[in-house]
Image 1 (cartoon, rainbow, N blue to C red):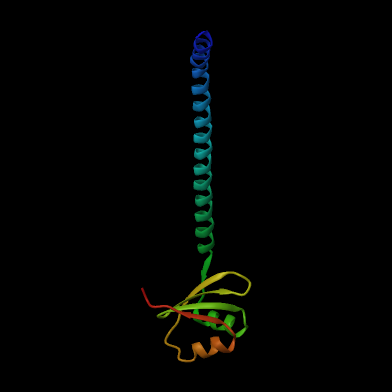
Image 2 (cartoon, rainbow, N blue to C red; image 1 turned 30 degrees about the vertical axis):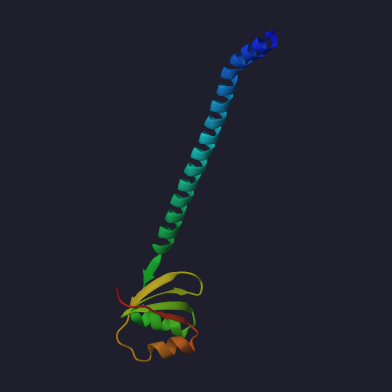
Length: 122
């Protein structure tokens, strides 16, 4: 009986220690989860800033300048939406232009190996 009472007293005495250890572990896991969430939020914000800054560097070309860069072979791709054309030069910069109804434009782009995407007008 004394052994049982001694064990019971030991358990009662150690119970707050075990509870404290569980709370510390739960607190550590909670802090880790918060750190992961904050890291993911910062990563998402960084990516949004990168995307918006790369889109902001578009230049507007006159149609005659656009034809000149197409003829020189510097255009890598275009997207045509109605009379609006956006695309990229082979050395990276993005551009936009407005085109009149030019029936030879698509043939010229194809001859110069420009990747052409046509999209509906929004």
